[in-house]
Length: 403
Image 1 (tube, rainbow, N blue to C red):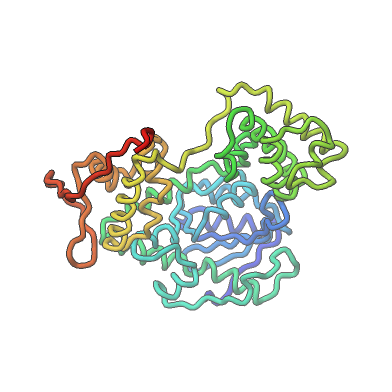
Image 2 (cartoon, rainbow, N blue to C red; image 1 turned 60 degrees about the horizontal axis):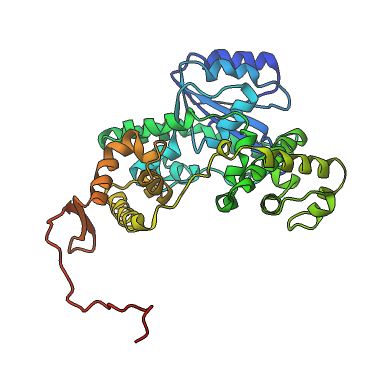
């Protein structure tokens, strides 16, 4: 635990901090934020650490975070833990994300951990017990208490040591390039506001929609997304998914028609809200079917389902042998999209393709076979081509012809 930390609450102190960190080869960063009742995350604190055991807490309620862009876009590597939400927060607050990233949770998945918490990694890798008391505190309250500050400072105080230890093991096991590639994929995502026209594709029920219902769902979900951003409330507070699916499947033509659908309450069926929903319905109806992208298919054709099951079994075995988090290798959805020929599948490029792509293709093609190894495990091996048959009579009955 650092002996002390700085609390940054004015621009001069922030400028001094930036001058210190800007030349560092690496720095640690974390954020505290809330988004339970808002569309956009509300950043409440940014924690930064840099060589020499230095830690600073920047209070965004007291000082504009935008100048941190100098640090984020500088040459140093940002060390974060489970940084996907923090990257969104930084992008919204500063307009950018770090130019280089090492995520300790991602990296730990390549050396035997399964999406570990920071507290677990700190204990197992650095031998440090992090404080827990302030984990669910209200970070937007002021003033910040000493216990809150100690908790926040601890989140970045040991990240550099954890990262160094993980890098050593990754290098020894020739997996450092994999972890770095995965961290870069995370860093390079689009962290800007989501595309309203793609919002409907995130709805689980969207896969069941057909024809014009897809266009209506897209238009209504896009209106909901824009409205939620305008009001800064969670999208579900504007209109639930169930209501959007109901509107898409049974398009209303009046406020009374909206009121009759499941998932809709009185506020949706009157005034400007009802008018906006009906306008979105008409917009969706008018959309050419070819302009509506099909939802991503997470299932394969029936004749390929055994291939998914076989490949999943092999990947689980391989993950155990290599001590890699199974979900880092591939999920069932990854397998399905790969076998469906999706060029954007995680298995279609990068280290996953080099390690797994060809064996999975050859397993599906029949060149490889999966067998028990006699020790309770599975092994992928070249197929012998000598099938084993079961000698049983096969029913040959024409059920259309009476016996």
